[in-house]
Image 1 (tube, helix red, strand yellow):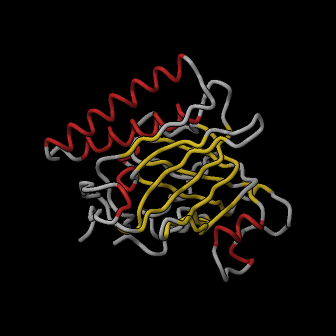
Image 2 (spheres, one colour):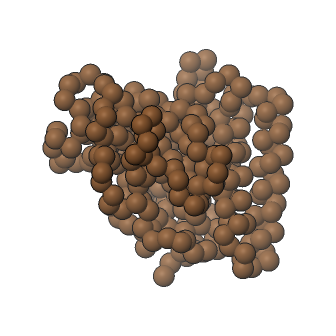
Image 3 (cartoon, helix red, strand yellow):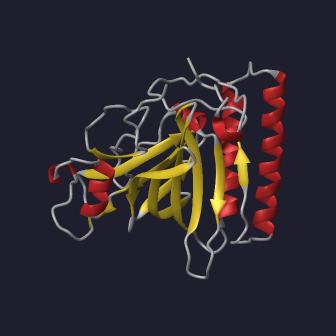
Length: 266
């Protein structure tokens, strides 16, 4: 069973170290917002990969999506490391901070003293999705010229409680949502291949096939960028959100409707 309090994002003040497995820590290096020096992050993969202007976290109940958290008008850094998809922003509005802090939070937790957005040295909106938690990666291409380009990460708090993280991306011309999704999928596959050497043969083959597909897509999407390309990558292994590390493997047993999906149950 996953941690029921997990909301992907939190407001992290300098010096606070609670729940490091669930939320990134602030960096002690000036110029960096979060600490990406975990062994699982790897080397050379911690620079900002792209940016996002909005974040939505929702839960699927009886086939209906219910929003839990929505923050917009952000200047969010998106990091794709060897172990997680990490988010960080130290420029945000009071409205976004209250959305992240959750119902009943006081204004004192936001770190924002003015209604307008400002740069804050003492606190930041941070979050991450560790790769073992990811069930699928997909895109929602923009539907019109000035529409949003969205990356969708599916994870789970428990086997029958699917959750969605939507990132409204701000991408340079050479980077498309489909290319971002292929990159994230490839990193997740490489994570499992590196840290789960005793996986059953059928799971290893499923990961190998998905990795080959994502790698081929990355080459194709780089050669011929298509901002309207929609893709879906479903991971054959996952684990519910947990504050414990290292993460154990749990094979996915079924997909449609999640009714018989007991992967990750203890």
